[in-house]
Image (cartoon, rainbow, N blue to C red; front, side):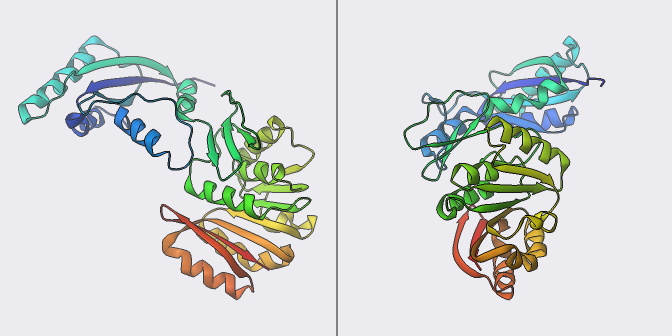
Length: 315
């Protein structure tokens, strides 16, 4: 494999010039912009809206510098290129924006290193009453009663950061019964399957149509030592239903897929079994509710977070 190189450009500027600096970097060829604003971290730590465990954040002055980061293809560390960028940033004074301190730095990045750089911002987080999602590379001392899910999402969806995943985790904590059989449809990183097993399910069958996600989920199952309880397969609800009727089916996928599999859900559930459907945007809630009623399922509970809906129904 031939490794690709990128130049990481870091511009430290004043808060009022952030948007303009981002525009300069985009014009220079950046495909996207990353902004490190210390005020954002402070606000998130103060609110702790979803139970994330952030590091201690010191009070941040209103005019604290912001770092604007971009990646340019190839090696762009030439002094002339960096000087030209800094001159453009300093020129923002002419339009009434204060770019201070206007520091421009560059470093060469290997794509494989870049792919892992997001891990620096992924922290352990508490979800629901007992669940804690912890990165595999981070140390964490659990409190009494906490259930730890160790996770490396790799290239698959599901870290507990997204509203849909959190909503489903909370519902699993409420509805999983000891000894149950659970189907996890569209498992992604395997986070919901791990939670189901650790919450008391005797057997969990997880599936995903993406082979990469299946590989990631299997690694997380092994890391959590749950091979005896969890089986991960490439496929969909129809392909895993040979295992029998489940006590609970969870599907944290997009609305269209929820609607597509709904007609098959009742036959895959035991009488009194539960269907936890996540990944539903609020605008399509009514559409999914109608489909649930059409299949004979009864809505038991629903919860919304930031425009996303999770619906729990019963056979």
